[in-house]
Image (cartoon, rainbow, N blue to C red; front, side):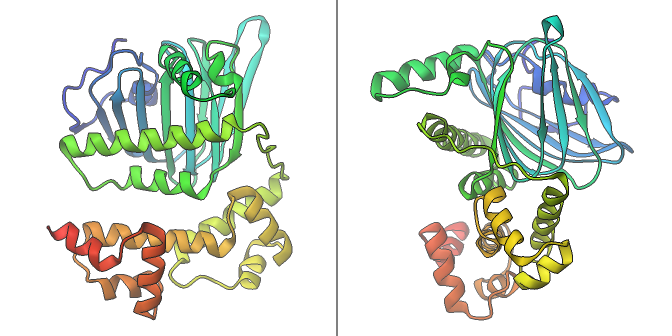
Amino acid sequence: MGELESKTHAAHSIGTDPETRFEVLFRPLEGNVNGISVVSQGPLINGRLDVHAVQPGMRLMSMNVGVQHQVGLDIEPEGTGVFLSLVLDGRSEYTVQARAGRHDQWELVPGRSVIGTFQAQKSRWNVFPGEPHRIVELQIASAKVRQLVSDYRKTVTGSVHPIFDRPEGFPRHIEQPLTPELRMIAHQVLNCPLEGPARRLFMESKTLEILAFQWHALSSPTLPRPVKKSKGERERLEEARRILEKEFADPPSLLTLARRVGLNDFKLKRGFREFYRTTVFGYVRMLRMEKARTLLETGEMNVGEVASMTGYNCFGHFSEAFRKRFGISPKELKKGRRF
């Protein structure tokens, strides 16, 4: 395989098997200057995969696809580097087979951020059915990683995580809760309304934001320890998140939500904060604001209608929350969009 062949960002279908449809994720990064979109409407996979080649040696992938049955992809990336995955929805598992029987394995589960290395070794990606897979992933080639580390050390006194220092080393990864800031960026990438050169600039800006937040976290001398939950508790927390994403305009009370997922309210509050780095109703506010922003940017609704649709009975409260979140009033955003 060579570099991405597409000369535009037009959507099209490629291949008939899953490996062919997803192969664009594992092609060489060096020199890529074009993006590609893959649309699948088959009986097994439905959805869209966008690959944004934002800079030579860096690309941003956004995926919003559903699978009807478990899909196993045998893949072998061409090249080495670092990936930074933001997982909003969907469950999958990635296993790297290395020499002498060594292997590295991790899960991609909702509400998690995964940072790790990739290299030209046979790997297996198992994609599980259920909710749609909504993932945003930044991939950086080893040469670009070394340049970033070198530039960082010229301007900042401190160290970076070994993952950035040795991107060609044996695959390893770090899993952390997906912070509200990174979750917001992922939503913005998946729902970008722009087209053409403006879209490319937007994706490049989001790439730098992802890199900044993740770099800051990995440069911290006290990297937070991964939160360990039993499979049962994790599944209940994920179910609570799914309920909130469907019912954010009129969310259940904390006690009602706890009963619906089979946890007591204390475990729900503590687990949600540990697993998703925000409170239950902090998550609801984030969902409401992101939906409101999308409606104002892309829809025909007026501000009052958007406030009502996102669960606000008082326009003043809606406007205040929106300004606090985005630094601009909803009316100003609406006017700017019209202009």
